[in-house]
Length: 634
Image 1: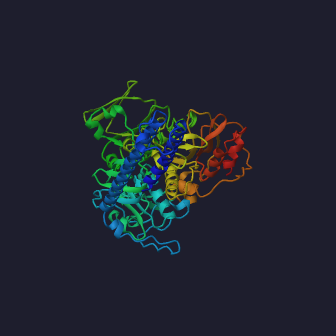
Image 2: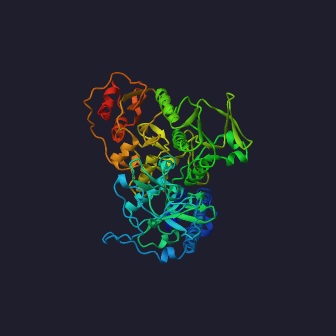
Image 3: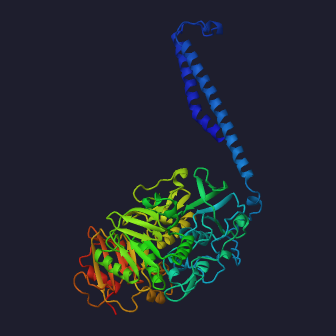
């Protein structure tokens, strides 16, 4: 009806104009034929000489055609609106009855919020505790069958992916909207958990059943689980639509294979369709593999681990207890952590641990060469055989061994391979959803609010975002997953906040050597390192004992640096390149401005590093800047 009225408003001026022109022409015709009698028979006027009769006929035809055309357009518009209205009614009617009949009315603002039940999550604590894992819980073993319950065909908040970013978003949504109904869909068989312990603390556990309990002791001696919350925290997916106080449900063992952005719905691998109001894509990434291994055949692939999930930890733990040799390909964070973990285990058995990489030393793409070489020696002391500058040419299975042929002619024989050569962002949904993928960094391209569309957000490893200080980036670390997931959840509930946080990451090479980093840390950039003698408290173990946490990103976000006070202790002049790098600060420069910082065995100083990068200033003497971290204090 509204469209008909709009059509009439458009056509009416044209009709009035045509009518006015007709009357003017008729008046001119009368003046030109002034000698005709005032009263002329109608029949005589039809045969009058030329002077306006034909023009009158043309304008009459024009007005008539306009009216007929307008009537046809209005009829088609009304008919189309009626059809679309009926289609929408049919769609709503096809949804499960409980979504509408069993759902309680949302309490008004004047009503006090209902108290959460024991199974309901309470609002999250401050930032430092938003992802604090549970201390005791009855946890799933990870071998459960995929969820087969019938779920509601509609959910207000849909989170695709079951990692840290999704869980952070769910907690954030529930904090701002206590009655929210949140559905997490994951292809894993377990609820959300932390990934860092899979390559760190779990390997140093004394518990023989650690692969079942997935509990570990932190460097400070406290025990915790890798799971963020026990199963009782979540509600059943099939009950989400009728939950009085809302809640968070996890649909495990299901993969989203298609996304209809215009229709606001997804399709699972079992053909189940779920519509949503707002959606978060937090699909993370998949481990890369070497093409020579992929082409080597099924037997080589069976004896190769791509390390990422709980199942990979369990599988590699079993392998390490049943073979005599394991070779890790990759010298980055993951490869070096696993090498140290397995190397420590090799001291208790006859396991041979080999680590090979194309760089000259461990962490060669991140650390300056002198520090990379020093780190390599530390890894060797953990019982790891290092093969540097190694480029793999081929891998074959021969005589119950895997033979790795290097391009320089060296041959390495081993029983099992761990490929730790990077992560590929999971953007499988980009094609069906029509979402943009960044050609340089990979991942879904999003704006400052982490939006890919008006009701679609992306967080974690899969998000390619714009950093106002460092340009467009994609980050693959735990702290970024926490912060971006939390921000996406806030924005899904109307916060409209931009992403400004400089996320940090950390790595531990056992309990005695660890570092925290922020910004762009690339060994190809100019660096300035300032070091000091370490003490007993300058280790990851001592740092966690002091802070009381095992995941350092949970503690470093508690405080914000405003005006750090420099240490009064004297600092050595010049850049310190000594044989021992007990503790120190490495500054990464671009155009004389600090764009990245590594704190080497210096802990709980990340807010200061974050402020230095945020300020974006040139510094004449970085030795003076290093004093802000108090590295020269005993």
